[in-house]
Length: 211
Image 1 (cartoon, rainbow, N blue to C red):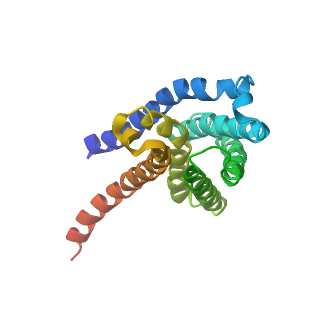
Image 2 (image 1 turned 45 degrees about the vertical axis):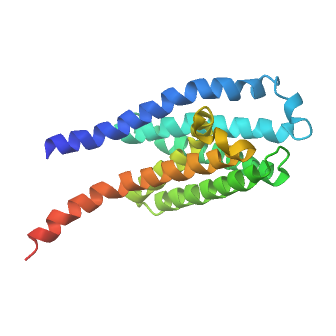
């Protein structure tokens, strides 16, 4: 039982570190050109939205990681609430401007707007559930909803990693749309299995032990 508990703590830690390590180079490659205005010409006419989206996305990735770390380790826990509020605020900015950009849909392939708009709405809904759970002091549910929201946040990284694989090349231009759908739906399903699996496994012995 002790070995299982250690494994249960180790796996989220490994996944968390993997998310951080993959985020840093992708953020540098794609967010920094926006922050330094080098990408302004490529987004003429809607660059303010892109810049606000970059700011919100950066806050989501950094503050969400900090809030999760504090929540797991309980270190400096008095700051957890404030990091969480800042994460939700940055996420509202990032997802809100992402939805606006999806509606503008300025770059082909135009199916991307449907994928990114759906992602933005999903993130806002999941984040609202996380906040609601915290307000009602249902902290186990809050933790699960925050994990789901950070998986959706990580889509920024995941879709750009997926774009470098040959899997989607044969799909042509619309392969980009497929990448976006794939890079948030599949990790979210995996996350849900990870959340639910230990509970189902723990429930089986309890039922067997019942008279």
